[in-house]
Image (cartoon, rainbow over all chains, first blue to last red; front, side, top):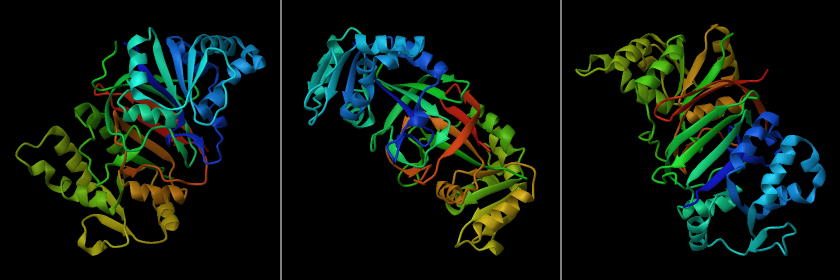
Length: 190
Length: 189
């Protein structure tokens, strides 16, 4: 059975973006980006909320971004190769390849996807992931903690979800970024 | 001049206590006590908000006298009794307290004077509401967190919304065998 992984880059005060919608402080440096690439190599499907999709689609729609460095080229390759499912009631169409548009989040459909997928499934951003948390579908949390307090904004983790976790991995980077990987207790790795 | 450090056991989703102040989810063992002890026992001023102070007072002064007192009970009690305690409270009256000063007003002036009185670190233990006030007044220099492997979903948050950005330097990170992760940050100058 495939693992459903919630992955996010956030400030130490737990936000993925500030009150102004900005997240320039969340941009990974080369060392962190290289690590992210290796982490995401196992992902076969991305489940994306509209905002997340709009942010990430540039990896396909902007060739200059991919061409920027060997690291970005590597990541673009990973993103392009994966299947994408975008959840949005308002998006008219999805311009990228290997991308499906769904109008609502159906836990049963996601459960079926987990049973049939051969590779890991990644979900983001936090609003979409909250649906998965509530349905008990998330198996793993991966957080990149940036050494910054941004004073408030969109929270990385869902409200009113109480869950026991097991630390699987911790990694510290030169820039002061800390990576923490947790399994949800009871959701054993396949 | 002493630095003021917030020292808290927190959930991964940034709570210092559950909704009713419950701390039953906080995991501590000898490994965590020993690691914390090294840094705590190097200080001689301990800062608290009223609720945390009352919690500490209900246990530590006599913890060493219990019949099954642990090594940590003995060590921490000894340090606690001699530490100069400072409580931020508008309601507590100083005269009824032992080895404790109360700051009820003039936060910036009082905390600055406290920092000037020592070269050692000043730890704020728990006390998230007091932490909010200190952060709002720009008085916090460092953050020392034991991140517990749990999402609480609600509770008393470590951080309150502020209209400001603070860049930090990660000084150290340590993983305990329990899965608790100690993160140690200092504010960038």
